[in-house]
Length: 155
Image 1 (cartoon, rainbow, N blue to C red):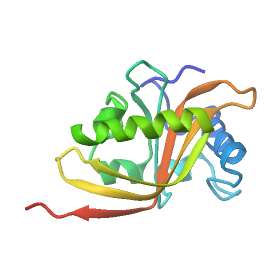
Image 2 (image 1 turned 120 degrees about the vertical axis):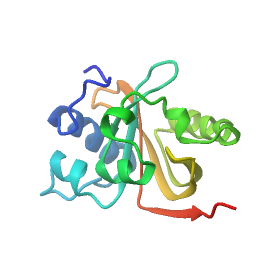
Image 3 (image 1 turned 60 degrees about the horizontal axis):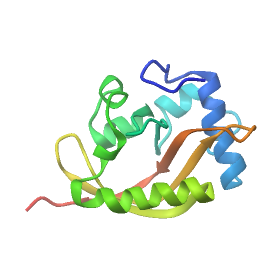
Image 4 (image 1 turned 60 degrees about the vertical axis):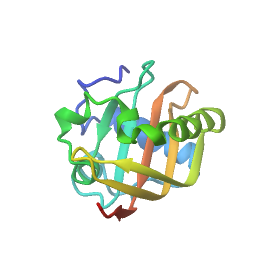
């Protein structure tokens, strides 16, 4: 499977990679049993993002909740380097998190400062970041989900 901007957001193979790796690494389901890729993309009440393994990873997936939260369309998201979801001063801390996730498989309870397309900032709260790892142990990137955030007022 190639993870790039050509991915269909409702692709069943990618949905299995995303939800299967979450289940194997985190130990619980990402989505309810009766829900599929269309629900995760269009109706899920939580943000889900994923990036590939490029030297400077690019987002390959952003569900509707992510698009609304960050202010990017699908076509904008899948061209965006994932490091740009954090401000310049937060990128080192973000990279430390991603390195730990690569080592350990996932991290839960993550809190990180993020920036939207318009430049407004928010704290993502209680996030889970995990490796996109298939059943054979091959890594395809990393994903994150969160359902809580706190806006930072502009001064």
